[in-house]
Image 1 (cartoon, rainbow, N blue to C red):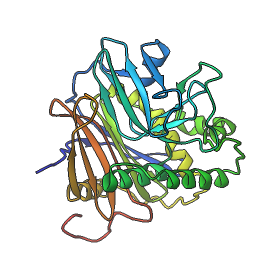
Image 2 (cartoon, helix red, strand yellow):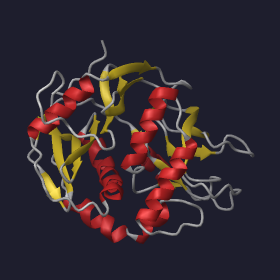
Image 3 (cartoon, rainbow, N blue to C red):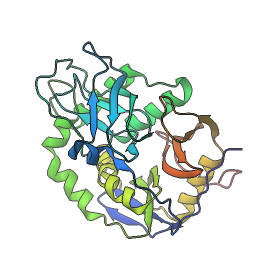
Amino acid sequence: MLNFNFNYNISDTVKKNNITIFFLQSKTKLENNFLTLEESISKSLVDIKEVNSKGTIRYLKVSNKSNQKLLILGSEQIIGNALKQNRVVNNTTLVPEQTTILLSVSCCEKNRWSPAVANNICTSESLYFTKGRINNSVDIFDNNKTDQFKIWDDIAEKLDEFNTKSFTGTLEDTYNKNKLYFDEITNYFKINENDVGVVAAIGNRLVNVEIFSSNKLLKIYFPKIIKSLVFESYKKTSQNYLLGLKDVYKLFRLIEFSEKKLHKPYNDCLGEEIRFNSDRVVGSCLNYKGKLLHFSGFLKDDMNVPLFKSKVA
């Protein structure tokens, strides 16, 4: 039976505007020496290219040139003119040392398919926004791939919400236009040395669980996680904070009782992925050497953690 071990201490709530964070603490961590995608790009330890001169929306060729394993986070956005269009990573992926793979991605810039006119490439300062992450997770669980048209519709809806005009249809234009607003909220939250994960809420509703194998990885990705939540919390003004530890435990129970599938990564990548789904929750977890490397889970749109006692709460 595929189970998750949510054996974490849970902090008191930390609130900023309408975002609430519970930090998850653990003294048991997986020793790792992984390169993150952002670090590997900055040190020229990775090549990221279209699969060939024509390119294809759903894959990028990624070459890990280092002697360390490369961690590429699901929902990381790879951007820049070195690619024909910006992409969002579909699944958390662990690439072995000195290995080239085809990385599963989706388009997050509908109106650009241009040749490489420059050599700039980087990762976005934000993960893909929460609603889009939920929809992608459902499609990956059901069909083993994302729905590209739904992704474009979700992005268009978010651009309208922020009243942003983007010639190429990218959320980077929204982020750049509102960077000070995003940074103000992100910088408010501080991570302690034993924190390895977060449970996040918008208003009085839990939305996301994100857990890593180490405090180091959480510190790297936490700002991007918060910014993805800011995309979702914009114009949501509920200040009726009624959430407590019991709600976090109920969410964990919903995840434990969901349907689960074991997925072996392709292309010689490392670890094994557990995908889960139910009428209330969806997400996935990448395990490596029998231990959690990255867990990402979501309460589905318009679903609330039940306030009544049931077999899963």
